[in-house]
Image 1 (tube, rainbow, N blue to C red):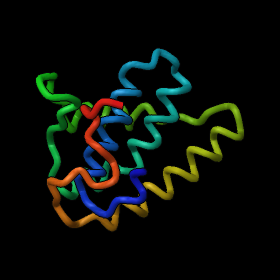
Image 2 (cartoon, rainbow, N blue to C red):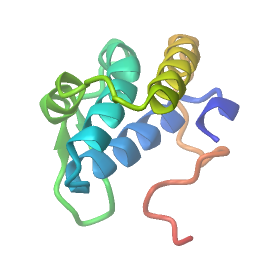
Image 3 (cartoon, rainbow, N blue to C red):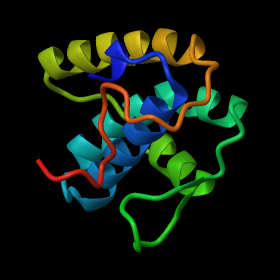
Image 4 (cartoon, helix red, strand yellow):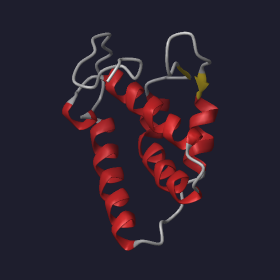
Length: 117
């Protein structure tokens, strides 16, 4: 869904969703994989000047340094399939995030993380 959007709000929403998974999953292997995905988009979050992220209305703010901490936890997954999958998605997310330049306040194709399922 994220790759289908060409607006920077999708990058913010993706960052929040990935961070929430990273923060709440107790498995080091999951944290390592999610850390790699966050690492793939971190330079563009910084390039666009994002310093704070709100996971849901009324919740605490996630700061850029929190995102950096998650990215720093990136580690290889011992299962070759997952490692290849994360490498592929990381490369695609990096390419996608590099092309984002338009700031938008619309929901686009990736609805806000606070939207009910």
